[in-house]
Image (cartoon, rainbow, N blue to C red):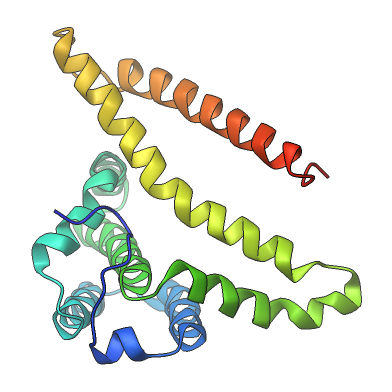
Length: 200
C-alpha cells in the first residue's frame, strides 16, 4: 500500500511533466475551486482527478489511501453542512476538499521532492529583491512535504497504542497524544536545524 504523498516511480506523461507546470496547475485548481457551487461540478472534478491517477498508472486504492487521514475531518464537515446548509452544500464542500487533496497527492506521487523544491526555489528567485531567501522557502516546502507522512505515521502509532490498551475510540483520547507527539517531533526537528546553523 502506497504511503501518503510518497513519490512512485513511473514513465507516464504526468511523471515526465515539469514540476513547475504541475505546481502551477495545482495552484490554479486551488484558486478555481472557490467557484465550484454545484454538485455536478464537484463530481466532474473528482472524475478528472481520478482519470489523472489512471494516466499516472496509479490505482484507485492508492487514491483512497490519500483520503484516509481526512476521514474524520470530512465526516465532521459533512455533518455540519448537512445540518446547516443541506446535503448539496455538504457534497460540494467535502467533494472539493477531497478533489484538492487527491490532486495535491497526485503531484507529489508523480514528482520527486527534489524537483518540487527546485521548482519552488526557481519560482521564488525574484523575491530576492525584497530580501527573501528562496533556498529557505525551498527548505520549508521540503520539510512540509516530509512532515505529512510523519504525522500520518504518528497517528497510526497512537491508534495502535489505543487498540493495545483496549481504549474506546475517543476523539480527545486520539487528538491529545497525537498533538503531543507532533510537538515533540517539531521540537527535535527545530533543534536539529539549529545545530546546523538554521536557527534564525
